[in-house]
Image 1: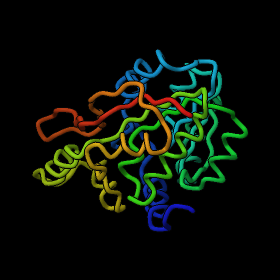
Image 2: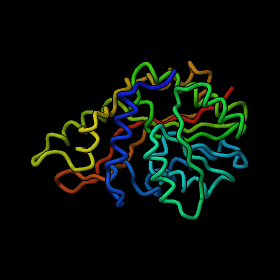
Image 3: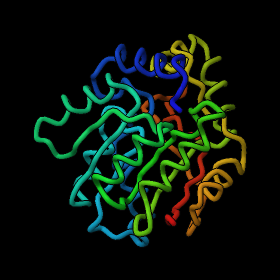
Length: 239
């Protein structure tokens, strides 16, 4: 099983076209506003001697930050263009980057066989996935965590769609970062309330901690406020 060609093409088109300058990717906030607060939630539960895998790594901003806290950091993404961009942005080789379809169970199993049990970081992947792919994505988290790993998963809540809709209808149209997402057919905040928790437990994961948060974007509202999207985070343990 693999993701649909429409979904794959949408992400290749997005990552192949978005400029590489800082701030052009709407969710690519400074790690101090994103990955670092998430590490504060994950590390009390995680074994820092295990590798970390960043699922949906994009251009690798968060993967490189995670590399400073774990002995090995691997970023994986469906898009080849994203993986190539991540490698260009990391000339020092702080992390590793691979193309991986999370819905491809055999490919996920192969990665686990190479790395062993891992800590998993996944930010806003399920809510963007097609409905049929969300269960397999959660299963990939469980497979990679194995028995010893811990997973940090954060996903947009449905309320985020309202914020984005208002932003898209702002005078002058949506900010450039959001416009690029919409024009490539990517659909933010589609997962229903409670769906993510059900997917994680359905994949055999046990939720150790959870809470509400916000994901800070690089875009701003017309009045200058930074866009912050309602989200829910989970720390889970593997089998």
